[in-house]
Length: 91
Image (cartoon, rainbow, N blue to C red; front, side, top):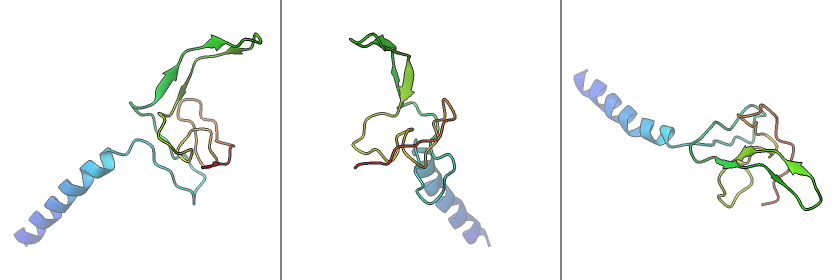
């Protein structure tokens, strides 16, 4: 009995740190929120384009070579605005 409890505890201690390291989780089979606020998210300051269009400050996911975990991609929800992603990933 003690041995089983110790093995279960060791298993949980080895699995929990891996779960905590995930900052953005993507699930393509569900349309629920996949993304959470993360320290790796990037704050972009507002600016004005050459044509006079004002771009307000916003937060985006850190660049990582994929579009599947971006807030604006279908299946994801931006945790800062609550908006659902609408874009289909191209890569």
